[in-house]
Length: 327
Ligand code: MEV
Image (cartoon, rainbow, N blue to C red):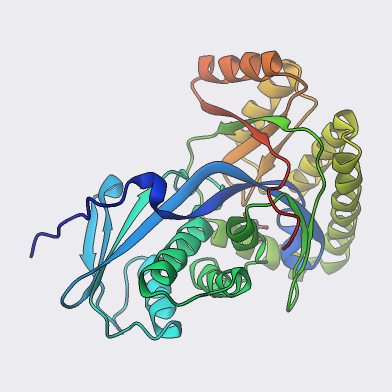
């Protein structure tokens, strides 16, 4: 195989990117039409494109991926299928190019890695070929990609990934998207269970259970909707105690949906025992990640330390006031 040259002219900081995300309230129920609130995180997926004589080459050095895209074949990973769709939609199928990706969002941890990857690639293609896509077009195209990777996605991950705003979301065509006002950053710890999980599998499982017991599941989704709507109020009033209680209740419903895991439960116990105002799983569950809401930096550090002592990876981050109010 021909050795590809990495473009040296562009540093990682200059690369196009999509944000990873955390969901504060309403994952899973959002797939079934309820509201949910999500925020971007500082971890992103980055991508850049540079010209090649022929073929489309995907290069992800950190994952040891360096592969030529073969159009129309059964692809091993859904990312190739999604890339093929993106190139088709942008009428770039016949152009030679290298697409290099720098992944920061941990893989299969419920932090929106697949959506961020799609957004980063779309933005990198847009930049290189000077297509002039609007944010809304990036959101729509990355949603199509999410539906290839996940099947039945609500669209919340790729929306947050595109706009990078703290927002309340309800699926639809177009979805309802409202950027939330936030006065100060909200301190968060993200605990990583270390157990990789496929969101698609969890979404399918919840859907199957819902079909078996529509009344019970419908009621749970309705309660989760109320929690998401109330979490918006708590955020805008900067009432972190109330937000914490809402997150705890939300986790209870996610447990009822059977999407938690022993590792996530342990991380949640650690967070609550060490002063978190609230703690819940975030994203698809079945492993993946959880979030703890904290009232101070010292509380974040204590919780992170305890998670490390128990053998888990944990990241200190914060939800920041949105850069732009427009979505
Ligand atoms: C995944 O981050 C969130 C889910 O609600 C799926 C979706 O909304 O597409 C589990």
